[in-house]
Image (tube, rainbow over all chains, first blue to last red; front, top):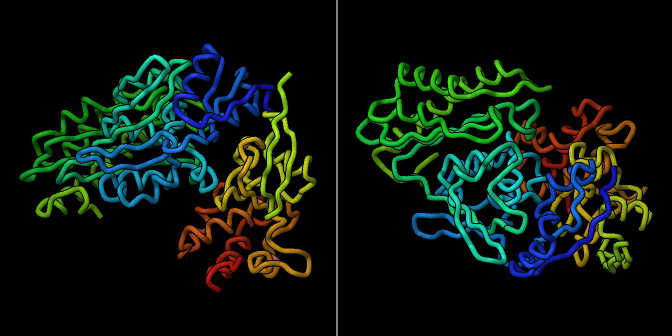
Length: 299
Length: 160
């Protein structure tokens, strides 16, 4: 189908976009990469009065190394994340995960700000934002605020973002030293949305887990952190018993939906399997680099 | 009534001017406004890949872009690759390897492969398959398409 009638403005600055959003009083949609918004318009699931195109705003797509943090402009394309040397060095889990995000033609256009704002319940970037304790910088005509990724995702396709607000920057803390990571996903076709996916990091010292982070997507309305499973892993080596207990904790914590692609039971089972695999890989990476230290030593 | 916007798009190296409604899809601008029907429209929601073109050199779904967004940009369609009797290396390879039957997916396959060949080493057939996973073909079973692209990788890519 074809999109419904809408007005259109190509903003050339953040202020111009914010002022257009304020004028539209909640009836506008922000057009970033368009890889989710345009299908919804073509299906006429949305009928905004105006599209505020942010693609012509200079300086909204960037990846900056800022000490302990990597700052990513909201308009940064998936392909830039996938191929950035800064991301590969400090957040290799993000580089790897991007190869699971759709296809090249989609990654050339899709943006990190768009993916997080759209919040598909099976998307990879919202899961990574939650895993990596991202801070999101949000602007509106009346000011700026920051929100933690863990508080940002409210429900399927629903985030803490008002109709006149624009997500402008994503701040991701670099992986701590002696941290290994694992990313596991199952999808029906490479590049499709995940039936379930798991991302995990383990920070290891003296043969024991100091910090464990586990995030999941595709198994609920929002990406989630498996807090109970994380707590079980801390203070000991990752052995078979610890892994099994973490898997059980994750399976107890998720209530996936049944849909055309997979049943709830299958997704719950799959989530556990993927947690086990992701933890094993993260542990192997963390212990392999233990003596050398530094996330950049990750394979 | 939404007022049409004047745009200038460099299509296959030629500046094309038009007044378009904001809601006009780039795919429909190419096909209906300009008459460049080489770009095919299948699903209109970014899944089938038939409408893939290059925007400033990067592959993109022309059904997921508005014509107004292409204002001032360079768009390359399948018509830019070669002509009958003068196919480019990739098209010649598709011909040689029987990489098409009905031809509906072919423009998208060619434009996708053009971008893949520039950006990825495509060292294995799995990498080629992964790269093509966003383009649907209902005739060939993909095998011959993979072979056609493999042969071009072996020749060191497409000179364009």
